[in-house]
Image 1: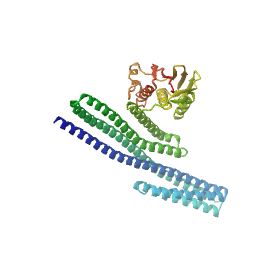
Image 2: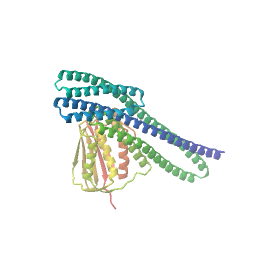
Image 3: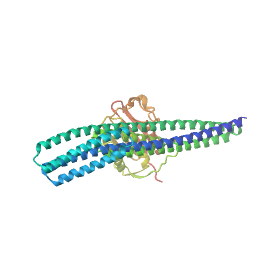
Image 4: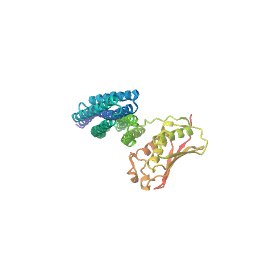
Length: 456
């Protein structure tokens, strides 16, 4: 009966795991579709805002061309006026196609078209008057005053349309954020349940085999642990891939929008795009750190040392970090010896030093210096990363290499608590060590010692 119960428990657990995976896959697909739709709505809203800006610019050019023609009588100014009117009509047609499915905006667009036709009629009346009687200054002034009044009404309508579109944009961005958060929570809960059911299955199998033969049970347990590590790695790889797809869409879209809107709107309005990009990059770094730790725990983190120009490597690293944090901190590099080429794993070393440098920047006040020192000797290579930031409390230093652990004095700084854990895992593969000195409010110095590796 016990053996029968164990088999049922295993079958039930794997059945529940399959159901959970199927449900997570279905919901993940649905969320991806919602994210794509939301991205499309955001893109359309930005296009509408751009078209409104272009419409107002074309209206200004048309007015400028009319004035130029009346003041100078040049046909080139008249042609500029007419060309601007054609552009204006084109923008109106584009807005009509974009807003036809929105009743409130369609009504505002009808008002805009009516006011636009009224002002274009005043433009034409002014031009006709000039062609008939060039000295009719009072009449021209009267037409100009009426045109200015209509322009003010047009600007009011444009502001109402823009405000409505901005509200829709904020709603779409909020909906996207909620979708991402729900998906993250769902996958975390689903993953936890999968591990629970998988643990039940492993425990049941262990009990069955334990009655038969202890050695066989121990071997099976080791195999199950390896399988669990592989499943965990595949699962986190899948989660990382699923999150990177919408993150790439968000980041690429926000960068493209920033490039499009940079010359068209005030810089202060681009701060929201900068926040989107910063959040997407932060989440991407979090996924990278989690996947790195998972690979290290599963023994899948590759170690491929090769000959490396260490000074050039350090300079390139600082250049990468400086480009991602322009004008925020002064990064200084000091080489105390002529190190030349050393035999190290470039990828793992990049993770170690970049995490230490980014932490130094993150926990230091703006514009404070961050220093990287390179020292080579017969025993190996040493790196020192020093900052003059907030420092680490003594009570936190014993746990600062634990995943997701953060010090009590960094609550106001965004972070995941994975950077130093990644550094420790990478240094374990090097056979290296890390030490530190830190004073609260005075700064921190991390010293990484990597022993000389034998290429043979």
